[in-house]
Image (cartoon, rainbow, N blue to C red; front, side, top):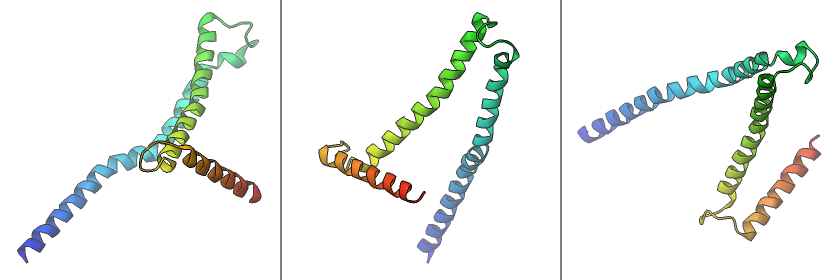
Length: 123
């Protein structure tokens, strides 16, 4: 009975630690989308010169650099999504050897075809 009791206490303690360490992650996940929207709004506010005068004609060198930097950040969001998708596909379809061979590439292509067909048929 003593062994079961200590095991139960250890499980409770482990469960409490999991909860305590998970709370900050949940808080960050809750506020991250709001902070992302706020960050985009701040960046757009910094580009107020785009609508103030004649586009491209009245801009200084600093404003050109700010505008190009903003476009670079927005374009980088799409590239990041592609990298995440490729990583997940590699993990799911690569098998036990963690390398995509010809058969696994065919399976992945077929999966994409079926997924796209299913999405289009549901429209």
